[in-house]
Image (cartoon, rainbow, N blue to C red):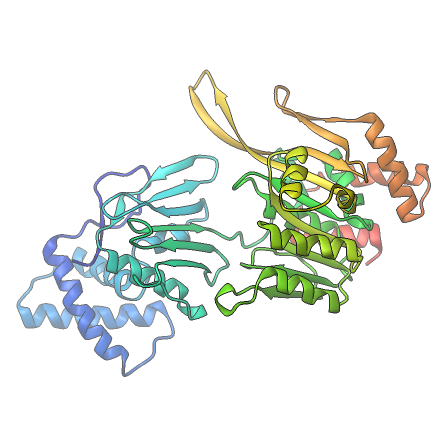
Length: 445
């Protein structure tokens, strides 16, 4: 009746009550009265909405001779608010900091959540009506003036908190929704060390790459943390630089005060390629192309790289290795002669690890490769059996010389700085605090 329901079973408990058919009917009738009241007044908070719903529920029960017990008077107003004003049970999932992703896979099927360090779990809730699902999606996209309908059954947008939403309706799907939540504060380099996604030694090398005039591509498979890694790397970039960002959905989160963000809008005919060309007139110190996914966007990235318009250009790319990165670039029409314009390729992968003792799979994210230079010689490679990174001695010699030439420092100064930075990566600092401290410690800013 309200188009969604709480189930008795589920691996993830929303802590919401199962409603009877009679309770759902009461909420539906109160919804009509609420909409009449909403035309007369605006609500500034959830508290105001709850207050009105309590009054309307009490009045309706009194008029119809319905006896509501104390428990019902507590949970019915909140369930009515979630249905009428909120995002149904999805609101509970989005509020949980442990939930990284939310998925609806069809009507009558349980929702799913991806829990940090625990994987996918079924939820004790489901949508039962396509209209209810459509209304919730449109409420989420309302702040951007976007809508999904049966005539326009596909929507990609960003929620107010920065989370990414993708939804489709029949005939494209049976009613599907995916929300990838946005982290309020990006992971810092020490976070990567504690999560064992990289080690301090590798991060020290990356800090020199980001300081120098070196462009970098972060490659990886789906949900491997490519954007998370790129955000983290910008904590090494001096904070007084001008950064221009071009994205289709705003996911890049960096600490720099002088940053210009351009958002593509395919519905208005403004592509990521158009924005990339616009940046040629904006004099950035660094240019970030959120994600190069097709031929046009890849060409735009290389036009920026070859045009020398910034000290460095950066992008994420779907590929599982550095060699696959270059094969895919060739497929998109990029000449091998132009590959040298990419100074470094970092490969970040999402992988499974199986524990024979517990007989369980767990998901990990690791940097698996780092290549550097015109010939893209390997600097570090991941050793899965030992769960560690192996340094390529010859590659590091060339890297050290290139950094010394770029920054005008001696080999001794490079070695001393490398050790200092490696130790700095182990400090327990959050993203903003790390960025401030690193700029002050190593750039005097």
